[in-house]
Image (cartoon, rainbow, N blue to C red; front, side):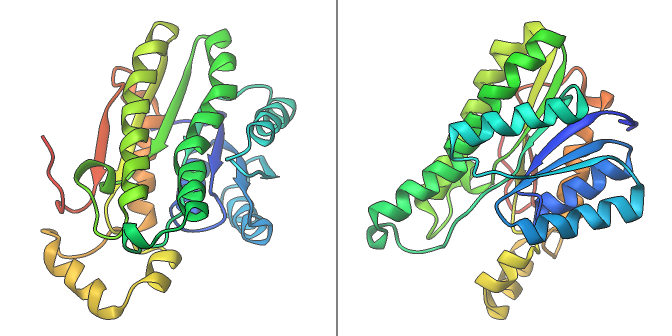
Length: 250
């Protein structure tokens, strides 16, 4: 799993799964560009990364829905590190509610963050990876995008789009030795999940998941580490569910 000296971008790195991914990649030696709109949370992640692993870091306040800001993200990362070996498109956002009660503003934000965000980040990163003839891209999707999710219809549609985008981009860039894969979380014990659910719902999820509990951010990060490492060099265009068996899609 050695990725020592690799240069990685992790979006949504201030907390939850993104923070777990940043810590995991740093543990195995990667220098990390931390990207988020939550500057204080991002600085906390940076402090933990440096204290634990001593790698080089860069904090960038970026709205991934903005094409200009994601261009800046790539430019500043290249200026700091000289290259980008790994891009992890993790940032996501949703509030569960019935589809027919959503507003246009809400739907547009869901689409901008969850679908346009990864597209924008890839748009600026891929040409650099093509030039250096190597790279690993890991898109964080969701099992909502594979099987649907009650109260998350637009979000699920975006994550389904991320999965299709991953597969198509993987075909386009394979000739340049760039691997593009997707990690698809099920219910995960992040701060946002805990705040947005009831204890009763969390207990129900535990009963529904064959392995009897929800994932931790570190367990999602382990899957990302695999796709970022040389162990996945002959794997591209794939979707790996990390859901304790809640969804088993052929």
